Image (cartoon, rainbow, N blue to C red; front, side):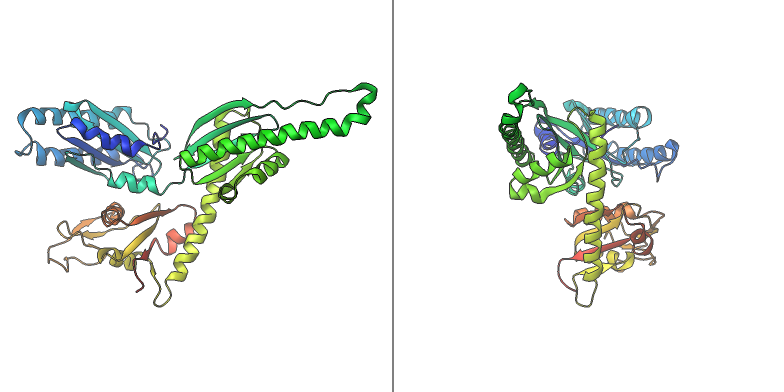
Length: 385
């Protein structure tokens, strides 16, 4: 099941609430690393639905008709997760549902999300928006001397914007006995057409890149053609080129996606390395950063974090105060209200949720096992410590 996030997904979801009495916003961590067996995932699913049913079906928050519809929503969500969900290549699931208003939208993500249910007049999109915001949107152009194709690559999926288009580039022709005399003129004529073709593709790429608000550009083609094409791009687009691969426009879509994702991974590795170097340097005295799980939790709890950086495999145990949302890996009581902390084997989701509620930017570290082993988490602060 590929991700199905589009450029206007958030806007479309917000429009769902126009005629709805209520909307169920359902988030579920479906990561196979955390839930190797489907039965383990279903335990969390049932616990979430049971808790939501107790809160909403046993109260006067909704009228009788709305409660009947809500029961249907819970049943549809449960059936989808148990019998229809394909967890291959996804880690997060988001569903927006309102049976009374005929609303049912399923979104799949390549990263984890905290598991929770919220019911209200509007869809809860804060966490979804934060997750989407961290991903780069890539424009991939595959080009040769005559043809080109342009694609959008985002969240592990690919979409073709402009299929095969071919400019009028003449081929070399035999000129008989006059060939030697006219060879240079013919070659110049052909190269002029090639140049116009590449310029045409560059113009179309600029329009698409700006319209779709892409972040990076990947180019496929023969090395000499790619080099010429890059030279014709506007300066801002040349700076956005993050990868190249050898290909022809006729390459199957699956291969274009594969090569694009390879370039994307390499670009992410480079950016990740730069980010971590900046983070480690920011930990110096009077710097604007902290490194390590405990200092990061403390900074987040006190509202100092501007950008949270965590390993995508982060998992830690500890306690959380449901009233103050205080997190600790070693305390047993909340220092704010004095309540007993609830112990959990994995508080990573709680940490992420708090960061989003505090309007912090999220950065997942995927390609640096040393960071996951040594630090687990870090943060850039809103002000120097």
